[in-house]
Image (cartoon, rainbow, N blue to C red; front, side, top):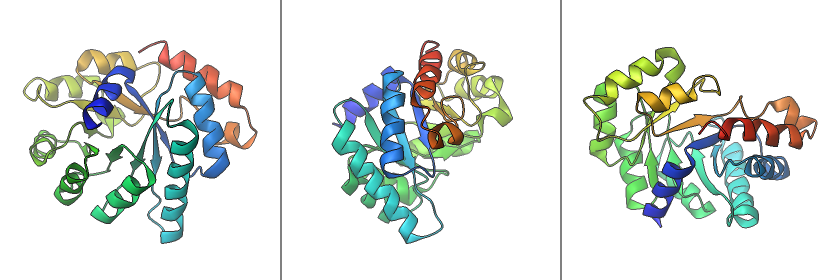
Length: 214
């Protein structure tokens, strides 16, 4: 199963990052994204409270139940081994973190899930790979640019890197040309107002526009 998830990430390339959207709203968002060719979705944990984390868990369960045959779902902003287990129990197949935390990476590997920790410097990227990461999220990518990815990927070509942070239709091809194998995206696919107003067709069209570049 884990290898299949890795292959799907390499195939579909774009992971939609969804923060602060829960329940039916998130389900409708996922349907609109899927219709536009987005097949990978990260539902992020809010660190403010246990209640917020539980809302993420319930949302992942809903997404997996309703769309598990069409999309792959993961958990984002995972900062503890306990959250790895919560995400796994909900049905998540990949774990994305904001940092390079050995505990979280090893817990993810032990759980049989795909590990995608965040890193920026060559030392952090290499360290994450040594801990067992399947991909490394280079973030914030927009602060560094495609040239940075190219420079880092030259000596670390064995590490599969995702560009995350400010990546959009204007830059995604540049990041791929620089060596990134995928990207995490949000604002170029949807806006909170579009979700609030139920503009699902607009989200689908934005997704189609983006995936046509991959």
